Length: 247
Ligand SMILES: Nc1ncnc2c1ncn2[C@@H]1O[C@H](COP(=O)(O)OP(=O)(O)OP(=O)(O)O)[C@@H](O)[C@H]1O
View 1 (cartoon, helix red, strand yellow):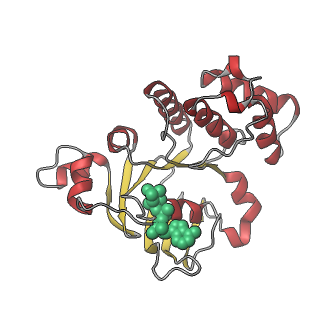
View 2: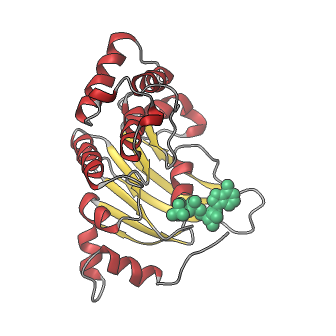
């Protein structure tokens, strides 16, 4: 589904590469986790694959399409759930979702039915006509998610979808994503929650300093790392315990 070939990114004015010579192949059935310490390059990889930023070098295809040749098809093919809430605080949940659906050409009764079905599944029906600025973090995350899936993307990118949400909201989000994956959506997500990634992901890549240090199923990575009992042990063994503060 996704083929990445020697992808590199150096931001304008930066004196280092945020992503270096990334090669990765992600198949259709995966729930793929991009894991790494702060500043490892996870958001940069997602932003590149969503064509929000341009690569410095290298290339990738999604379902055989490239940004240069198939910009509009690619836009329809993918959904993006950004780290920050991309919602209008003074509009209601329903109005926000109508707006995002219309950006993908959806309208009328089809759009309304899709919004209502997703609100129902994610436990938000009764809040559909409340303004977003009255919502909790977990509710906003769920609306952010619905906004990204109304056009039925084949590939869904999520940048830290469970930040700032309680366990109940997190479970609803994770179960919803698992259902989407079962129905055929490829899921690529970043997270700092290694327990969550261990149970949720079919495959993960650990990246550090813009390079992949290892990849595989969580089970294989744990089995192959001496003295590792879980994914966090693997992560610490491969990325070290030094802090990654920067300003
Ligand atoms: N717009 C930018 N201009 C210059 N450097 C940037 C820019 N965005 C990110 N970087 C740098 O690129 C590197 C990778 O950043 P990125 O946000 O991709 O990491 P991350 O793994 O998503 O981190 P976090 O877990 O903190 O979200 C960091 O050193 C960061 O400071």
